[in-house]
Image 1: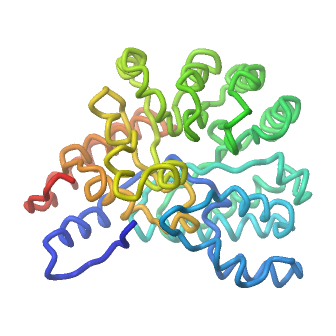
Image 2: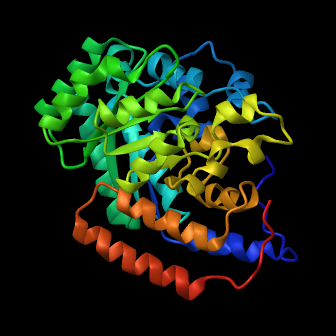
Length: 362
């Protein structure tokens, strides 16, 4: 995956500069996947971890066939996170990095179960720490942040119900909804139907990682029709069922996609991954997609590069990106009045600053 460059002799640099300055929302990012290498090294030394500097440096290398990042997230939960102050630091560092790429609003995932079980940081103090970071970031840089507590699907359905109980008992304005993540293989969405029902009844929005790891398209269908999610994260394998994809498109369902998704980079040939990646096919099938960073530091990506990859690697045009931008606004869990304001201001910026530079389809 070539790096993002800004060669003044390269006409595409005008587009990259435009994409950098474009106001953005981020709807699919894992807080632990934003950890900076320097922070991880510092915590490993603090905790006298068995992780060596070479081990940690390897976490931040994306080779031709990159491995997944789940082992890094588990290492954080099980060995390195120790206090609410650590969660404050992760949150403030992520939001500072995001706003440097003109992200105006960011919803990020966080797994309370592993945090409480392994790091021994209870839900209430954890949310308080992250919320303080959100408040401080908004005051300093103008970015808004929101937390999406997420079910650890590798834990039990009872643990998921317990997490929903924490959400109801410790309500906070910064917590806008619930998700589910970690390894989808052998952990199907229907196991967590009761948790989603309770979250909806309590007034929380919901989303779910589904169809991420090459799992059957029925996982996406279950997330939509059984869990009754408001949004889908990934959803790639639904391209195998175009009729269902069209139906969900007509319902206005938003799919948050990740150009740096590890599964497809690892399983598709290097010369074919961008040509055969489901993201390339999704808009033509009616999907309303919005590109996101997922685990930005571990994926060696940032919001600007995420949007540039949609053109450089997947062959979309600027007008396509304009629609993706609007999809993200429609998918954000904010008041309709805020969405309307963003649609107007973001669209005005896009139209006024749109570079008049052609780019060839990949």
